Picture 1 (tube, rainbow, N blue to C red):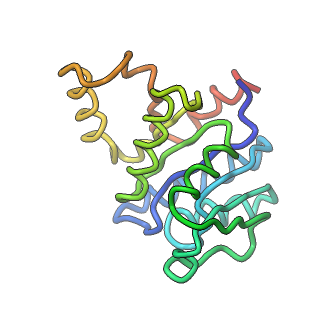
Picture 2: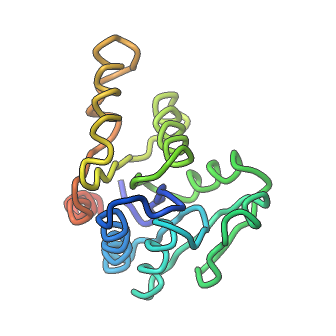
Picture 3: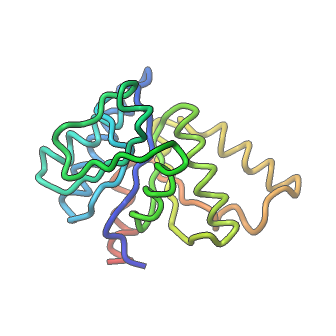
Length: 182
């Protein structure tokens, strides 16, 4: 598997821990240094904006996908390589999934969880087979991971949970997967 385009799912807010923004910035720089395009939701606010700004500052390619509804809600980023405007949130997610080779999930809210669970479900249903990384900045996803382990323990998941996603604690941990796949 070759990762040339990585989808980033994360919050349109910053969260309460400065580490989240630091990791978003580091991730953007890391992708730029390895010529990996970023595909994301197109916004300029919160962690999305931090990651986008980092990619732009490091002169790399970034593609955004935003639904018409959110053009007024979320301020879209003006300086990205390409911004696709789609009809709704479902088309947004589908387009992002189609455009990427793999995905990484940073801290975020309901929308981020929706994106995480949809891409996990699509992998499970063999709609696609994309590598999924969870950036567990400061243990943000510890409770969710524990809950998913409980789901597996209780017999609600197909396959081994360790085959569903890879948990990273630092952006630089992504490098070993990039080197393995590129």
